[in-house]
Image (cartoon, rainbow, N blue to C red; front, side, top):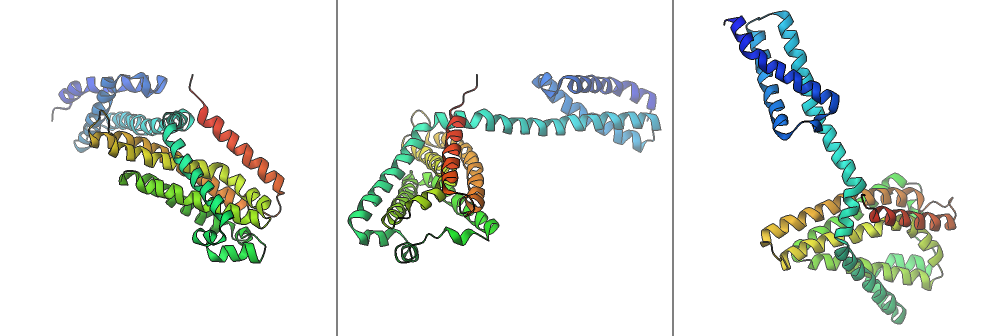
Amino acid sequence: MNIQRWVARRESNWKRLDALLLQVEKKGLKSLLAPEIRELASLYRSVSADLARARTHQVGHILCQDLQKLTSRAYNQIYQGSRRQEWEAVKEFCAWGFPALVQRTFVYTAIATSIFLVAALVAWWYAWQDPAFMSLIVPSNLIYQVRDRGELWMGSIVGIEPLASTNIMINNLSVSFGAVGGGITAGIYTVYIMALNGLLIGAVGTLVGQNNLAYPFWAFVFPHGALELPAIFLAGGGGLLIGRAILFPGKYRRIDALKYYGSRAAQLLFGVVVLLAIAGVIEGFFSPSPVIPDPIKYLVGIGLFILLVLYCARKKI
């Protein structure tokens, strides 16, 4: 190989890569146009091949060092820069994208919430009118503990907080994934999950109310429920989005509607997972704590709900 001729032929590429890297290092990857980014990646591969060839033919220690530095700089900017962009995209979604998505899909979340609340009211009404109805919804051991022993069941969490918190998260996530995935049944399974959970909350609320345990019960529910219930409602809205794509694709082909609305449901689920993770920690460690007074638990629950509403209502200026 004629080394001088090879260097003369390849040197322009090295200089061009160096110029692009200098721009990226000073102004960031966003300062490059799309064709320049593609050129940067292409030059990186080309110079990497030049480095390998220079080492094989023992072109010279100084040249090999220079090419090594050039490829290392390119690698750092291309791969670490892309990772930074990914993290920036995640932060942007958390800061503004998720609230905007919640606002755009609010109608579906409102429908899911309405199904839950109507079911809760139905359970509350029938449980007061017919004691036998309670046993159809609430587990018998829970009825025995509240009605016959006059105590709540949250004390079982104390002492095993990490395990309880993990189990709570898993259970809530399974409910939420089921609510979103249920959309594939044209939303029927989503409606079922929302109604079932509403019936359970309504019946349990009636049970503790009938036995003068409503105040400590809702003190337990408020702190984590302020995030957990809205998260489940959002998951239900995601499932209804998918159901809408199947039943009413509108101007889209059904497969395209599934992709479009399914993408929105998946993004909603991302936020739901975060909310449920936080709620699980609160439910495992804070809500059942006998050390924390009940009024504080109510205040924390109300505060968290207000913060969530303000977060979901924010708009990028």
